[in-house]
Every structure is written in structure tokens, then in C-alpha cells.
Length: 462
Image 1: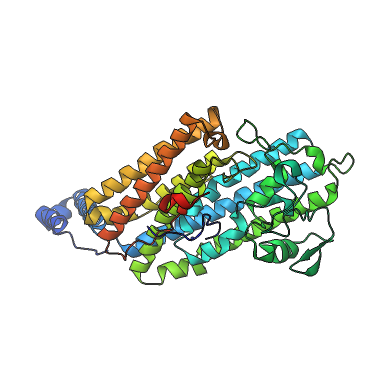
Image 2: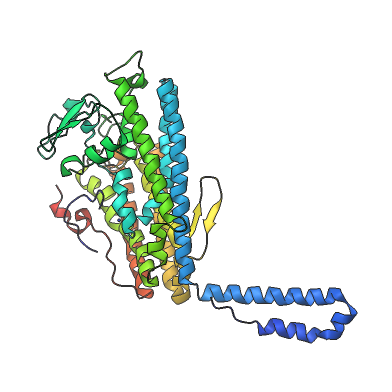
């Protein structure tokens, strides 16, 4: 496992053989049978076809085609990002309704739409680390953690008023029509896609200056979670968007920010879905290269998400320092779901089967098929490790749904909650090791999975 230099990694990434048995069947029936009874001929022909199909299917299972595996991988990526676009459009519809008539009910509907939109997107994270085009883009849609004071008002008693590493820590672009960024005056009177994407996102070279993506929208829907390790998520009032009965000021600009950032999310997701479509750059980079490099991309994506990113940065770090802010969906308290769907995404890719939001399934030849053909016992180990991870994460998700949310689970002194999180971390680490074994079977170069100080050098974590 490689060791990362910083605690966080926010953006860091057929043969077609003839069937002699079928031919013998036809010959044994003979031409006389055909001349006496056309039905007999058809029956014999059906036996021939069945035999040929069976032989070819068996051959495919024994020697799966790498190109077909990579094509299926790309198909699942395209489907996942397309589903993310679809659910983001539904989120936009709910947000439009909220802005048209801000009520507790319309706000609750928008929040539910945000949570639903996370389901397909989180499953696409399995494509991130192995594909440069995805890793370079990911920060635009899923950056975290963020200094939310850049965007809107914050509770300074909880949040503070300054951060020596970030001049824009409490800049509050919603309340200010001009900001100084890097010594330059920036006109923020109009909230546009260009302002958010080009001027504010990572402004001043600070990764925590997050102006776009799911988590910016999450903050605008929920507001800060001020509950620490006590029960409760953010509780922004719907009247923050009520132009006639405005709370906390600037309701018009807040509404415009939410509208623009949601449109930008759809635009960014749509762009990525097109990269995985036929003729898209991501698909071409994967399928038009050396097959071993394509497989390496697949496994690096799975292993890096398993080990450095999910087990390390998103889970072990927060558990080590017992910090409720160290949760992925921190305003909504949806982290137990986002972690769960990450591991479902890993399983999707290894088994080459993805259930879409419309209920249909995209599937085909898989990495599992390749490993099983070469070393069945290793494939069994990988499958068992993945299913164990899914089981541990299912337990974590169930606890998050019924007992306490993730920020409470990682709280200091919560022995039972800590143990549930640690069990999932342990399963992810074991899963990464089995993926390394699978890579060795395919004679891929040594694993270079993303690492994490929280796993590789925990004494350095403070």
C-alpha cells in the first residue's frame, strides 16, 4: 500500500470452436430422415444449434475475453453516470418547487431528492481512481470537506471567524457582491456558473473552498449540523428561501445560488456520462489501450476506493480523532448511505452487474470471470471478501437508519458504534488485499492503491 503525504485526499482517482458433437448428431440422423420427415430434420438442426451455443458458452466462461470485460466496465460507468444525471434532474425539479413555494414540506421533498441522487452517484466512485479523466473531474461534483462559510452564513460560535490557511473562510458570497480573492477584487454581484466554477471553486488554491457539487447543495438544503455527536442533522429553515418572509437575509441570492449550483451539477454529470458513451474520451482511454492497462485501471479503482479513500480518509481518520465533522455527507447525516453505496459500486464492477434506477440491469463478462478462469480459489476469496464488506456495511447502514447516525457512531466513548465502524474498515482493508491477489493472478503490475496516513501512519494523525 502506498502512503499518502497528507491526511486527506479530497480530490486526490472468443474463440468460436466448431462443435463436432453437434455435427455427429446431424450425421447420425442422416439424409434419409430429412427426406422422409422435415420435422425430424428441424429437430436435428435444433440439437446442433443447442450444442454449438453450449460449447461456445462454456468456452467463453473458461476463457473470457478481456475486451468484453472492459466494454462491460465502460457500459456500467455510462449507465451509472446517466442515472446520476437523471436523479439530478429530479433534484432540480424538487428545488424549483422549493424556490417557488418555500415550505417545510417542499424543503423536505428537496432533501429527499438530494439523498436519492446520491445513490447512483456513490456507486460510480469505483471508477474514480483508476481513470484519470474521472479523478481530474471529481472535485467539481463531490469535493469535501468544505469550509461552508465561503458560501453562506454560519454559526461563528461553532464554526469560528477565521482560518489562517483560508482567507475566504467566512467570505459568505451570498451576502457579499464583491470579494477579494488573492489580492484581486472579484465582482460577485451576479451568481453565475462561471463565478462558482472558475472563481470560487478552490479559490486561492485552498481545497476546502468548495463552491460547487453535491455538498454545496447539501449545505444549502440542510445548513450546518450543530449537534456534534448528539442526534440531529442540519436544520436550515425553508424561510431562508422565502422572498416575502425571509430569514437570515439575502434570500434572493441564496435561491439563485442554489438554482445555479444545481444546474452546474447536472451539466458536470452530463459531461461525464458522455465521456463513457460510445466515442467518449473515458471509454476510448480504457478500451483502445493495452488490455492489461485497462484491467489495471479497473483494479486500481476498486483497491484505492477500498483502502486509502473509504477505509482510510472517510472512515478511519474520523474514528481516530472522534470528530463528527469527519463524515462525508456531514450536513444531512447521510454518510451511512454514501459509504454503503460505495461498496455496492465496488461489487458492481467486480461482478459486472449494475442495477439501474429504472430497475433494469447492465451486466456482462466480468473481472470475476477472468480471475475464476485463471485461479478459481482466488476469485472465491475476492467474492467472499466483497460480500463480507457489503455485510459489514449493511450493518453500519442499518444502524444509521435505526439507531444513530454516522457522526454519533464515531463519537468518543461510543464503544458499540465505534466497533461497527471499525468492522467495516477491517473488511475494506481485507478486501483490498484480496484485490491485490487478483491482480497478481492476471500478472498486472504491483498494486499502487491510494494510501492514507490514518491507516499507514496513524501516529501522525492529530
